Amino acid sequence: MSSTPYLGDGFRVPKTAELVARSLRSQIIRGELTEGQSLPPELALTEQFGVSRPTLREAFRILEAERLIEVRRGSRGGARVMTPDAQVAATHTGLLLQSRGVQLLDVYAARTVIEAPAAAVVAADPSAETIRLFRDNLDAMETLLARTGADAHGLVDLSQDFHALMVESAGNQTLHLFSVMLRRIVDRANRSFVAAHRTEPARMRQYRSTIRAHTAVVDLIEVGDVSGADRLWREHLDEAHRRLTTGPLSTATALLDLLE
Image 1 (cartoon, rainbow, N blue to C red):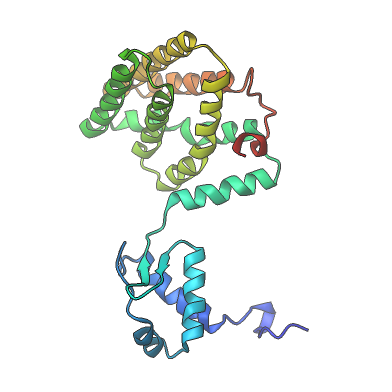
Image 2 (cartoon, rainbow, N blue to C red):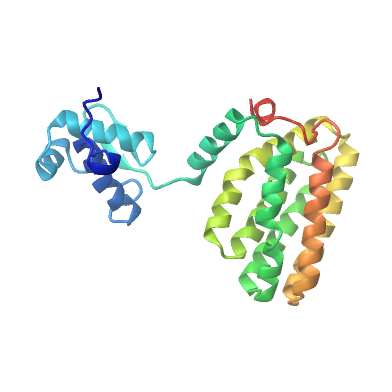
């Protein structure tokens, strides 16, 4: 029989260390404890919470596992605050999807659902700052593409930055977070495509096509053409999906094979 105490209806009574971790976590999430800030010394915290040092250290281990603090050892050690990082969630999401045998088709379908409405939302109320950020991205791609022996992976990054900016500019923070979580997988697929699918001249032609499509979308957004931006962006996503899931990468590619 388990010795863990339970309340009625099967609710487990939190351990003392979990309660301490919950309190510190709340302070981090609310911004009362900020990135890089040192937590008070262990003695001060044990007195504050009325707990033993082993209980406090167990609470620290919980927060370390959540990547909310970093505990440094030694005379100048101690616990320092780390703010929540989307890349931590992305890593765990990738592992979970791999463990379930998810295929690349599934990820691209999710990406399309997240990204497809974004251009119309941005075009409905385009800001000068958003347009500037889009143009800066396009200028960077043009500059890199014009160089002899252009860095193909740098172009991959800039192209994905454009997609990320589109979702972020639409203003829905939850969808933006989901987009960030999927980006690691999409980036790996794009890099595999660059490495195996085409010769360098063909890849450069494809990036010129990408720049033209991105530029056309920004032009439509800038003038507030909601239906035009929506149509062109969805077509661009469909084409990217088709291109990246044929040949060396197929819709049946397992994420376990892609991410290992």
